[in-house]
Image 1 (cartoon, rainbow, N blue to C red):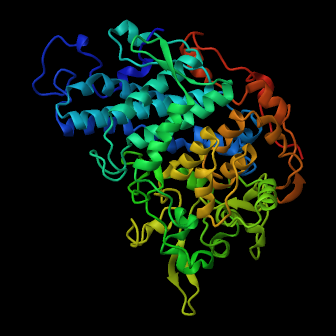
Image 2 (image 1 turned 90 degrees about the vertical axis):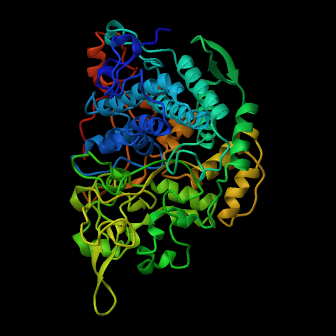
Image 3 (image 1 turned 60 degrees about the vertical axis):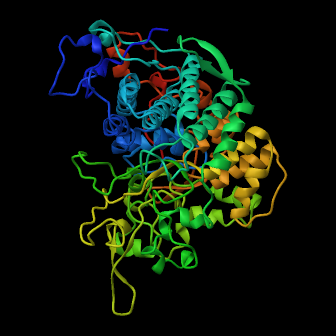
Length: 585
């Protein structure tokens, strides 16, 4: 396997490798004199983290966005002209280069990770060196895991170039077994070298990844690879760059058990306090959560095993961070201005992506009628007085909206009678949180971190791998539900209910081999297009046919294929027949 750097290597912050240097610099940082100190190590790895949340600036092109809109539990939605939302649900496309920004951002992160991994051995403090190395390996594994689940075979790049010729050569796609073997090797090493400190006692500070993150991510990778590809174990890359071993389910189960027992992570007491709508400002005017504990802030939440940080310092220049644009995209489309949002309080305005499938609501109610997580996760907007179907030409509308990752308002001013006069577009704009109580940009004001892996997911993964109900029943107990015996059906339902709208469902239905059936189940659902009642129907060749043609993999940006002079090959199913035109009512 040829290991060369992606062609964008020249954009990296630091000199690529020592062989490029013919003099020693006494005034600038080079790989000859940097990193050495703990501060150097954190600074170097911060450059890798900087790429982690960068795709959020174009969140509509990310793997997380795809995972939500392509799954069977949400539709595309958006307005009449928001075809890029609708095509994700139907596995079609309007722009073959749609995922260019995500491809570039993730390979930028990989390039920076490769640079850090090649140079962190210079750091004198062994504890800090191992922590920073482990974090970087985990980040690189995460970047590759998103790419391989989204595109399948992609170029595998694990080293920096040794000369200009290598830097300019466009690498070919690697077999998926090699990509997964590299991911497994990174996570295995990260787990072995990172300190056994509690999640909130890391040597590198709050917000950094931990050994427990690596263990949880290993579980996620193992379950997808073995399920989707029908394997018994995860391949493991050796030091020589060839597959020379494997990681079996017992080792993965032990890693998850270690995370459960020793990480310090735990379930919060009340499911509602996981979500921003239970924040102390909004809950005063939201009866549903008046008796719930306050929202557990990011960085203080023991259930966050892996979260992508978002910034309350975000601006349009994107020079100082990225707000959580998913909260804007998944928020309810304009329904009559401020007065309407008061009725929908505390859920604010946005672009209307991802209306919730009514079949999820009905199937959840039938299977688990006493599950409080259903109302904690889903807003039935149609029960709100004056709810407007088709506002701003909303498409694939169901009246149901998720409540987890959504613009969340708070009262800014009250009338004399105690009713709300004006709203903060985001509760975080208040002085109770990050804001000054005045500035309140409805597009940039969403500072909430994006959860990637919660502790509840770790418990459910452990139950699935060991086929035991212990972890699953801990999750159910938190919801006040009775214990159940382990079964495949019970486990799959529990993941669907507990982790709804958190980016896991798409991978789950793919790895369980039920995607065609689950996607086709959307057909016949009651929807409204531009306020006109209709039903969900196939677009193009149809849900089942499109999944059969693509296996759920997205098109590689054609611009990358062109740049590679044909070295890259397009994924199956993405020819001109997959172009989406519009709904045809």
